[in-house]
Length: 333
Image (cartoon, rainbow, N blue to C red; front, side):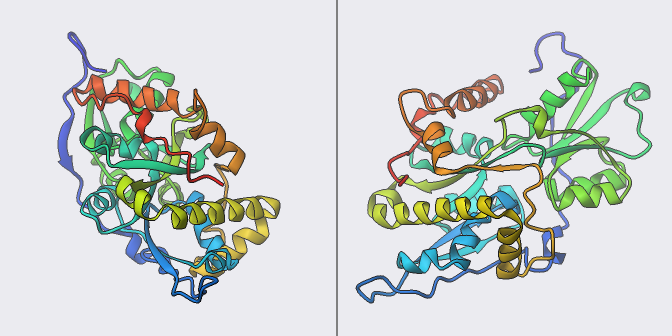
Protein backbone atom coordinates (compact mmCIF):
# COMPACT_ATOMS: atom_id res chain seq x y z
CA UNK A 1 0.00 0.00 0.00
CA UNK A 2 1.04 3.59 -0.52
CA UNK A 3 2.79 5.09 2.45
CA UNK A 4 5.12 7.93 3.32
CA UNK A 5 7.59 8.51 0.55
CA UNK A 6 5.59 6.48 -1.96
CA UNK A 7 6.03 7.49 -5.59
CA UNK A 8 2.43 6.57 -6.41
CA UNK A 9 -0.05 9.14 -7.54
CA UNK A 10 -3.24 9.18 -5.46
CA UNK A 11 -6.17 6.95 -6.40
CA UNK A 12 -8.76 8.95 -8.34
CA UNK A 13 -12.38 8.36 -7.41
CA UNK A 14 -13.76 8.73 -10.93
CA UNK A 15 -15.65 6.31 -13.11
CA UNK A 16 -14.97 5.70 -16.77
CA UNK A 17 -18.42 5.90 -18.38
CA UNK A 18 -20.17 2.52 -18.48
CA UNK A 19 -21.50 1.34 -21.85
CA UNK A 20 -23.56 -1.50 -20.33
CA UNK A 21 -21.78 -3.86 -22.66
CA UNK A 22 -23.84 -6.78 -21.40
CA UNK A 23 -26.91 -5.57 -23.25
CA UNK A 24 -25.49 -6.67 -26.59
CA UNK A 25 -24.72 -10.21 -25.49
CA UNK A 26 -27.55 -12.54 -26.43
CA UNK A 27 -29.00 -14.30 -23.44
CA UNK A 28 -26.50 -12.85 -20.97
CA UNK A 29 -27.92 -9.51 -19.83
CA UNK A 30 -30.80 -11.07 -17.91
CA UNK A 31 -31.63 -14.74 -17.70
CA UNK A 32 -34.85 -15.80 -15.95
CA UNK A 33 -35.03 -19.38 -14.74
CA UNK A 34 -38.23 -20.56 -13.14
CA UNK A 35 -38.44 -24.05 -11.70
CA UNK A 36 -41.96 -25.19 -12.49
CA UNK A 37 -42.14 -28.26 -10.30
CA UNK A 38 -44.02 -28.53 -7.04
CA UNK A 39 -42.99 -29.98 -3.75
CA UNK A 40 -44.31 -33.26 -2.49
CA UNK A 41 -47.26 -31.50 -0.85
CA UNK A 42 -48.34 -29.89 -4.11
CA UNK A 43 -47.35 -26.40 -2.93
CA UNK A 44 -46.08 -23.89 -5.50
CA UNK A 45 -42.28 -23.67 -5.71
CA UNK A 46 -40.33 -21.21 -3.57
CA UNK A 47 -38.65 -18.98 -6.15
CA UNK A 48 -35.37 -17.39 -5.09
CA UNK A 49 -33.76 -14.48 -6.94
CA UNK A 50 -30.03 -14.80 -7.60
CA UNK A 51 -28.11 -11.80 -8.93
CA UNK A 52 -24.73 -12.57 -10.44
CA UNK A 53 -21.82 -11.18 -12.40
CA UNK A 54 -21.37 -12.78 -15.81
CA UNK A 55 -19.12 -15.72 -14.91
CA UNK A 56 -19.43 -19.42 -15.91
CA UNK A 57 -18.54 -20.58 -12.41
CA UNK A 58 -22.07 -19.66 -11.33
CA UNK A 59 -23.81 -21.69 -14.04
CA UNK A 60 -24.16 -24.79 -11.87
CA UNK A 61 -27.30 -23.01 -10.69
CA UNK A 62 -28.64 -22.99 -14.27
CA UNK A 63 -27.68 -26.63 -14.72
CA UNK A 64 -29.54 -27.56 -11.52
CA UNK A 65 -32.65 -26.01 -13.03
CA UNK A 66 -32.11 -27.64 -16.44
CA UNK A 67 -31.70 -31.06 -14.83
CA UNK A 68 -34.89 -30.65 -12.80
CA UNK A 69 -33.06 -30.74 -9.48
CA UNK A 70 -34.67 -27.51 -8.31
CA UNK A 71 -38.15 -28.60 -9.30
CA UNK A 72 -37.69 -31.87 -7.42
CA UNK A 73 -36.92 -29.83 -4.29
CA UNK A 74 -39.93 -27.56 -4.78
CA UNK A 75 -37.74 -24.64 -5.76
CA UNK A 76 -37.45 -22.09 -8.53
CA UNK A 77 -34.59 -19.75 -9.31
CA UNK A 78 -34.61 -16.44 -11.14
CA UNK A 79 -31.11 -15.49 -12.30
CA UNK A 80 -30.44 -11.82 -13.02
CA UNK A 81 -27.23 -10.18 -14.27
CA UNK A 82 -27.51 -6.50 -13.22
CA UNK A 83 -24.65 -5.46 -15.54
CA UNK A 84 -22.05 -4.21 -13.06
CA UNK A 85 -20.84 -5.49 -9.71
CA UNK A 86 -21.50 -2.14 -8.03
CA UNK A 87 -25.13 -2.16 -9.14
CA UNK A 88 -25.60 -5.78 -8.05
CA UNK A 89 -24.25 -5.09 -4.56
CA UNK A 90 -26.40 -1.97 -4.19
CA UNK A 91 -29.52 -3.85 -5.24
CA UNK A 92 -28.74 -6.70 -2.84
CA UNK A 93 -28.22 -4.23 0.00
CA UNK A 94 -31.59 -2.67 -0.89
CA UNK A 95 -33.29 -6.08 -0.63
CA UNK A 96 -34.04 -6.63 -4.32
CA UNK A 97 -32.32 -10.05 -4.47
CA UNK A 98 -32.36 -13.06 -2.16
CA UNK A 99 -28.83 -14.13 -3.08
CA UNK A 100 -25.82 -12.81 -4.93
CA UNK A 101 -22.96 -14.69 -6.59
CA UNK A 102 -19.72 -12.73 -6.69
CA UNK A 103 -16.05 -12.75 -5.79
CA UNK A 104 -15.31 -13.00 -2.08
CA UNK A 105 -13.43 -9.71 -2.25
CA UNK A 106 -16.55 -7.90 -3.44
CA UNK A 107 -18.43 -8.44 -0.18
CA UNK A 108 -15.71 -7.26 2.22
CA UNK A 109 -16.80 -3.58 2.30
CA UNK A 110 -20.40 -4.71 2.88
CA UNK A 111 -19.26 -7.01 5.68
CA UNK A 112 -17.59 -4.06 7.35
CA UNK A 113 -20.94 -2.26 7.49
CA UNK A 114 -23.29 -5.12 8.34
CA UNK A 115 -23.14 -8.50 10.04
CA UNK A 116 -26.38 -9.54 8.33
CA UNK A 117 -24.71 -11.41 5.46
CA UNK A 118 -23.17 -14.86 5.14
CA UNK A 119 -21.41 -17.02 2.58
CA UNK A 120 -23.56 -20.10 2.14
CA UNK A 121 -21.63 -21.77 -0.69
CA UNK A 122 -18.39 -21.41 -2.64
CA UNK A 123 -19.01 -21.94 -6.34
CA UNK A 124 -15.50 -21.90 -7.79
CA UNK A 125 -12.04 -20.40 -7.93
CA UNK A 126 -10.73 -18.24 -10.74
CA UNK A 127 -7.61 -20.08 -11.91
CA UNK A 128 -6.74 -18.04 -14.99
CA UNK A 129 -10.19 -16.71 -15.83
CA UNK A 130 -9.47 -13.21 -14.48
CA UNK A 131 -6.94 -11.47 -16.68
CA UNK A 132 -4.87 -8.30 -16.85
CA UNK A 133 -4.56 -6.54 -20.21
CA UNK A 134 -2.05 -3.96 -21.32
CA UNK A 135 -3.00 -1.39 -23.96
CA UNK A 136 -1.74 -2.28 -27.44
CA UNK A 137 1.56 -0.61 -28.35
CA UNK A 138 2.02 0.53 -24.74
CA UNK A 139 5.51 0.18 -23.21
CA UNK A 140 5.62 0.48 -19.40
CA UNK A 141 9.37 1.10 -19.53
CA UNK A 142 8.92 4.44 -21.32
CA UNK A 143 5.81 5.67 -19.48
CA UNK A 144 6.17 8.44 -16.90
CA UNK A 145 3.10 7.16 -15.06
CA UNK A 146 1.07 3.95 -15.32
CA UNK A 147 -2.72 4.43 -15.45
CA UNK A 148 -4.34 1.40 -13.82
CA UNK A 149 -8.03 0.59 -14.32
CA UNK A 150 -9.85 -1.63 -11.83
CA UNK A 151 -12.87 -1.79 -9.54
CA UNK A 152 -11.87 -0.51 -6.09
CA UNK A 153 -14.85 -2.00 -4.28
CA UNK A 154 -13.79 -5.66 -4.50
CA UNK A 155 -10.79 -7.81 -5.35
CA UNK A 156 -9.61 -5.71 -8.29
CA UNK A 157 -7.06 -3.46 -6.64
CA UNK A 158 -5.46 -6.29 -4.66
CA UNK A 159 -5.32 -8.45 -7.79
CA UNK A 160 -3.69 -5.60 -9.72
CA UNK A 161 -1.18 -4.97 -6.93
CA UNK A 162 -0.19 -8.64 -7.09
CA UNK A 163 0.38 -8.22 -10.82
CA UNK A 164 2.40 -5.03 -10.39
CA UNK A 165 4.58 -6.67 -7.73
CA UNK A 166 5.25 -9.76 -9.83
CA UNK A 167 5.94 -7.61 -12.92
CA UNK A 168 8.39 -5.39 -11.04
CA UNK A 169 6.18 -2.31 -11.51
CA UNK A 170 4.98 -1.72 -7.94
CA UNK A 171 7.41 1.16 -7.33
CA UNK A 172 6.49 3.05 -10.50
CA UNK A 173 4.31 6.20 -10.34
CA UNK A 174 0.72 4.96 -10.57
CA UNK A 175 -2.62 6.58 -11.31
CA UNK A 176 -5.60 4.47 -10.20
CA UNK A 177 -8.91 4.79 -12.03
CA UNK A 178 -12.18 3.06 -11.14
CA UNK A 179 -13.21 1.03 -14.20
CA UNK A 180 -15.73 -1.83 -14.21
CA UNK A 181 -14.58 -5.08 -15.83
CA UNK A 182 -17.17 -4.63 -18.59
CA UNK A 183 -15.56 -1.29 -19.49
CA UNK A 184 -11.85 -2.21 -19.46
CA UNK A 185 -11.69 -2.97 -23.18
CA UNK A 186 -13.29 0.40 -24.04
CA UNK A 187 -11.01 2.29 -21.65
CA UNK A 188 -7.99 0.62 -23.27
CA UNK A 189 -9.34 1.48 -26.72
CA UNK A 190 -9.74 5.12 -25.75
CA UNK A 191 -6.32 5.30 -24.11
CA UNK A 192 -7.94 6.29 -20.81
CA UNK A 193 -5.98 3.53 -19.03
CA UNK A 194 -2.79 1.65 -19.82
CA UNK A 195 -3.49 -1.55 -17.87
CA UNK A 196 -6.74 -3.06 -16.57
CA UNK A 197 -8.25 -6.29 -15.31
CA UNK A 198 -11.31 -8.08 -16.69
CA UNK A 199 -12.79 -11.53 -17.37
CA UNK A 200 -14.79 -13.35 -20.02
CA UNK A 201 -16.53 -12.45 -22.25
CA UNK A 202 -14.86 -9.05 -21.96
CA UNK A 203 -11.32 -10.49 -21.97
CA UNK A 204 -11.81 -12.04 -25.42
CA UNK A 205 -13.15 -8.72 -26.68
CA UNK A 206 -10.03 -6.97 -25.38
CA UNK A 207 -7.80 -9.54 -27.07
CA UNK A 208 -9.67 -9.16 -30.38
CA UNK A 209 -9.13 -5.41 -30.13
CA UNK A 210 -5.37 -6.04 -30.05
CA UNK A 211 -4.67 -5.49 -26.36
CA UNK A 212 -2.16 -7.84 -24.75
CA UNK A 213 -2.79 -10.18 -21.82
CA UNK A 214 0.08 -9.87 -19.34
CA UNK A 215 -1.20 -11.70 -16.23
CA UNK A 216 -4.00 -13.93 -14.97
CA UNK A 217 -5.44 -15.36 -11.77
CA UNK A 218 -3.56 -18.65 -12.06
CA UNK A 219 -0.69 -16.59 -10.63
CA UNK A 220 -2.71 -15.59 -7.53
CA UNK A 221 -4.02 -18.90 -6.10
CA UNK A 222 -7.25 -18.70 -4.04
CA UNK A 223 -7.36 -14.89 -4.15
CA UNK A 224 -10.39 -14.80 -6.44
CA UNK A 225 -12.76 -17.30 -4.90
CA UNK A 226 -16.40 -16.98 -5.97
CA UNK A 227 -19.14 -17.31 -3.38
CA UNK A 228 -22.92 -17.25 -2.94
CA UNK A 229 -24.13 -14.81 -0.30
CA UNK A 230 -27.46 -14.46 1.53
CA UNK A 231 -28.81 -12.19 4.26
CA UNK A 232 -28.80 -13.91 7.65
CA UNK A 233 -32.45 -13.07 8.24
CA UNK A 234 -33.30 -14.98 5.05
CA UNK A 235 -31.22 -17.93 6.22
CA UNK A 236 -33.16 -18.06 9.47
CA UNK A 237 -36.59 -17.89 7.81
CA UNK A 238 -35.83 -20.09 4.78
CA UNK A 239 -33.16 -22.46 6.11
CA UNK A 240 -34.61 -25.76 4.70
CA UNK A 241 -35.23 -24.26 1.25
CA UNK A 242 -31.80 -22.64 1.10
CA UNK A 243 -30.19 -25.90 2.17
CA UNK A 244 -32.07 -27.66 -0.65
CA UNK A 245 -30.86 -25.03 -3.09
CA UNK A 246 -27.24 -25.55 -2.00
CA UNK A 247 -27.64 -29.33 -2.34
CA UNK A 248 -29.07 -29.00 -5.86
CA UNK A 249 -26.30 -26.55 -6.86
CA UNK A 250 -23.56 -28.90 -5.64
CA UNK A 251 -25.15 -31.97 -7.23
CA UNK A 252 -25.29 -30.09 -10.54
CA UNK A 253 -21.60 -29.24 -10.11
CA UNK A 254 -20.75 -32.93 -9.68
CA UNK A 255 -22.73 -33.84 -12.79
CA UNK A 256 -21.07 -31.07 -14.79
CA UNK A 257 -17.60 -32.21 -13.76
CA UNK A 258 -18.50 -35.80 -14.65
CA UNK A 259 -19.11 -34.72 -18.26
CA UNK A 260 -17.87 -31.20 -18.85
CA UNK A 261 -18.76 -30.88 -22.57
CA UNK A 262 -22.30 -32.20 -22.01
CA UNK A 263 -22.84 -29.93 -19.02
CA UNK A 264 -21.59 -26.89 -20.93
CA UNK A 265 -23.87 -27.65 -23.87
CA UNK A 266 -26.87 -28.15 -21.58
CA UNK A 267 -26.25 -24.83 -19.81
CA UNK A 268 -25.79 -22.89 -23.04
CA UNK A 269 -29.03 -24.29 -24.42
CA UNK A 270 -30.90 -23.56 -21.19
CA UNK A 271 -29.69 -19.96 -20.97
CA UNK A 272 -29.68 -19.26 -24.70
CA UNK A 273 -25.94 -18.61 -24.74
CA UNK A 274 -23.60 -18.75 -27.69
CA UNK A 275 -21.41 -21.88 -27.94
CA UNK A 276 -18.42 -21.57 -25.64
CA UNK A 277 -20.02 -19.00 -23.31
CA UNK A 278 -20.18 -21.55 -20.47
CA UNK A 279 -16.61 -22.76 -20.88
CA UNK A 280 -14.75 -23.70 -17.71
CA UNK A 281 -11.40 -22.54 -19.09
CA UNK A 282 -9.57 -20.83 -16.22
CA UNK A 283 -12.22 -21.90 -13.68
CA UNK A 284 -12.09 -24.61 -11.03
CA UNK A 285 -15.56 -25.54 -9.80
CA UNK A 286 -15.92 -26.24 -6.10
CA UNK A 287 -17.53 -29.50 -5.04
CA UNK A 288 -19.18 -30.42 -1.74
CA UNK A 289 -15.82 -31.65 -0.45
CA UNK A 290 -14.25 -28.31 -1.41
CA UNK A 291 -17.03 -26.43 0.36
CA UNK A 292 -16.58 -28.38 3.56
CA UNK A 293 -12.85 -27.66 3.45
CA UNK A 294 -13.39 -23.97 2.69
CA UNK A 295 -16.29 -23.13 5.00
CA UNK A 296 -16.35 -25.69 7.82
CA UNK A 297 -14.23 -26.82 10.74
CA UNK A 298 -12.01 -25.01 13.22
CA UNK A 299 -9.72 -23.63 10.50
CA UNK A 300 -11.76 -23.19 7.30
CA UNK A 301 -9.51 -22.79 4.25
CA UNK A 302 -11.19 -19.50 3.35
CA UNK A 303 -9.99 -17.83 6.55
CA UNK A 304 -6.51 -16.89 5.20
CA UNK A 305 -8.15 -15.38 2.11
CA UNK A 306 -10.55 -13.38 4.28
CA UNK A 307 -7.67 -12.24 6.48
CA UNK A 308 -5.70 -11.06 3.47
CA UNK A 309 -8.64 -8.95 2.30
CA UNK A 310 -9.24 -7.69 5.84
CA UNK A 311 -5.63 -6.53 6.09
CA UNK A 312 -5.80 -4.97 2.63
CA UNK A 313 -8.94 -2.97 3.34
CA UNK A 314 -7.62 -2.04 6.79
CA UNK A 315 -4.58 -0.56 5.04
CA UNK A 316 -6.99 1.67 3.15
CA UNK A 317 -8.60 2.80 6.39
CA UNK A 318 -11.62 0.50 5.98
CA UNK A 319 -10.98 -2.27 8.51
CA UNK A 320 -14.00 -4.62 8.43
CA UNK A 321 -12.90 -6.47 11.57
CA UNK A 322 -12.92 -10.24 12.10
CA UNK A 323 -14.59 -11.82 9.06
CA UNK A 324 -15.04 -15.36 10.38
CA UNK A 325 -18.72 -14.55 10.91
CA UNK A 326 -19.21 -14.67 7.13
CA UNK A 327 -18.73 -18.43 6.92
CA UNK A 328 -22.01 -20.38 7.12
CA UNK A 329 -21.43 -24.09 6.62
CA UNK A 330 -24.69 -25.32 8.15
CA UNK A 331 -26.57 -25.22 4.83
CA UNK A 332 -24.19 -27.67 3.17
CA UNK A 333 -25.61 -31.18 2.58
